[in-house]
Length: 129
Image (tube, rainbow, N blue to C red; front, top):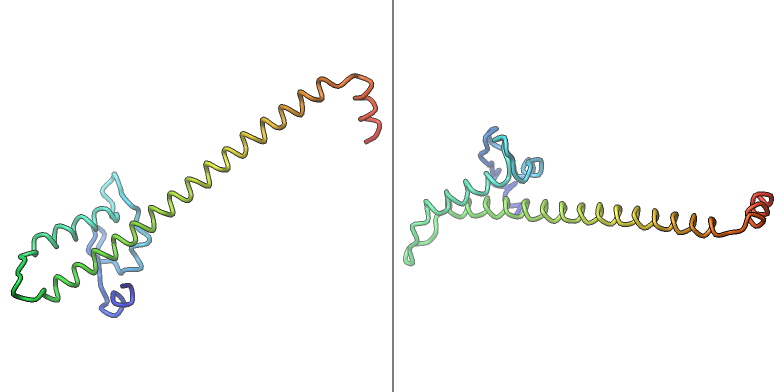
């Protein structure tokens, strides 16, 4: 898919101009301030596909519709990969937070154990260090 895009020198229309397939990776998934984003690019390509989708069971599809479909598939692939990466990063953050919480509880339990130790045992522990 990407080999074909590079051979055809495909460009994607955005609010900041024409971008190559590799430039799509730098776009955010969505944007609230109107800057170029993958969601807008995908919606525009979907609209172009639907507008030119005069379906005929007699005539073959045109090269233009095949190129539009390829562009759409590329944008969808980039979106899927970026969503998967975001989910993986969120899972890593959640695991890190949970680990920190567990380490805090372990430290608290250790302190409780030490608090229950007699004064003489504590003094011996200090002297042995």
